[in-house]
Length: 145
Image 1: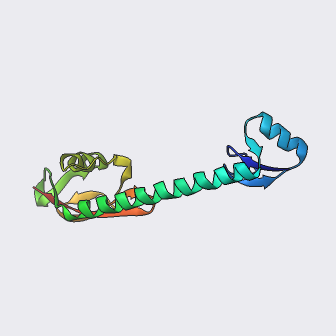
Image 2: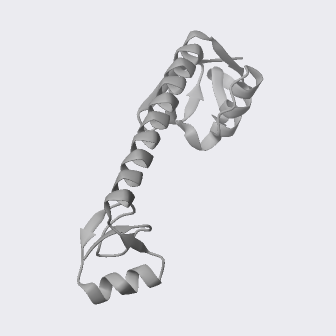
């Protein structure tokens, strides 16, 4: 029996996969609302849904790429307190960077910001911001007294 999975089933397949199972197990999956019988109509509906998801994903990627170019054009500056020898007290956190980005008009979650190293010295630092799994913006942040 060929079925289309409606949810991920452990050791069987991911959602929207078309698989071949024994009749008894197929009936069990259908009763548990984890699968539907793979008819011509349901396969066509699945293909339409997948193409719609792909279009939405492409639109989202294009939107994130335009956001990336906007973010990389802006100059960022964070004022920090320094001690002797121009050493920064503590380090600049992702929360501070997210707050600075919010002031500039970009709503970025602190979890999207990836620091290669702690920002503990004055000067310009590169910071990666993951906007989408395929789009990463690299901004330059200047730490000043």
